[in-house]
Image 1: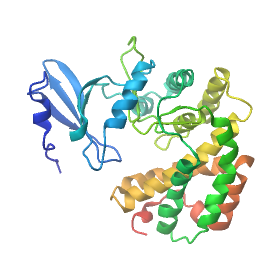
Image 2: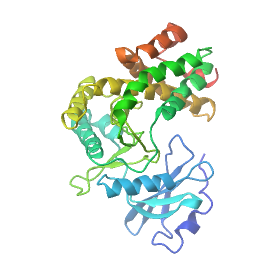
Image 3: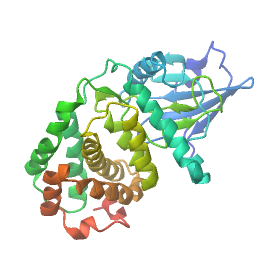
Image 4: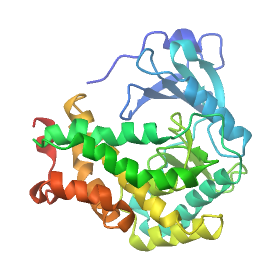
Length: 333
C-alpha cells in the first residue's frame, strides 16, 4: 500500500529551491522515520521525516555537524526544521556497501579497508560531546534479550544472573574504554554509502548515526565485521582486525574486548529483532537472527565471555540454540 505524503511536507519546501520538486518515497528502516528523494532541475536531495513525538532529528543534526567538522563524510545539511521533524540533506545516492558486495564479492577487502580506515580516523580525533556508553547503557541493551527473546521463546530465565554475568564481563572493558571514541553504534554494510570515485571528501558516506555515544573503539568495528545483514568472510574479519590494530594503539586486550562487545551487541540485536516482530509487526527481521546467533555463539567461546556463556548453558536449552534455521515462530510465540 502506498502511504500518503506526510502532512507539512510541501510547507517545509515552500520558498526554497526545492519547491515543486519530484518526490519519490524510499524504503524505510526499523524506526518511525521516512525518507524521500527529491529531484528538481537536474539536482537531487534526500528528505528525512522524523516525526515527533516518536522521533527527534536534533541528535542527527548534532552528530552530522560534528562528523563534518572532524573530517568524516556525513551528508551536508541543506535545510532543517527539527521541531516538525524535517531534515533535507545531500543525496549520497543508492549504492550501499551491502548491495555492491552482493554483486561484486571480490571487492570485499578493498571496501572494508575503507570502512575500517574511517574508524581509524574517528579514533584519531577527540570524542564528540555525546553521552557516555557506560555500564548502565550496556546493561539496558543486553536486557532486551531477556525482555523480548526469552519470553517469545517460552523461556523462564534467571534475569538477575544475566545482569550479574554481564557486569562481570564488561567491567574490565570499561576501565580500558576511557577517554573513549565517538561510537556511531550502527556501523554496517547498509549504513555505509559508496560515493563517486575520486570524491575529494571521501568515497564512503555515513548515515544513521544519530544515536552516537562516547564508548569503546571496538564497538563500531564489531558492528561492521559481525554484521547482522551480510556474511563477512572470516579472512576479511581477521584482516580488518589486524588493519585496525596496526594503525592504532589498540592494546593487548583489544581482541578480547572486541568479542565482549560482539556478544553484547549480538544479544541486544536478537532482542531488538524479536521486539520488531512482536510489537511492530516487522517479522522480516526474524530471518536475520540465525546469522546474529551464530556470531553470538562464536563470541561466547572466548574465555573473556565465560560468565555469560555459563548463563546461556544454564538458561537457554540446546534445542533453542540449535534452531538456526527458522525463528519466525517468535513473531507469535
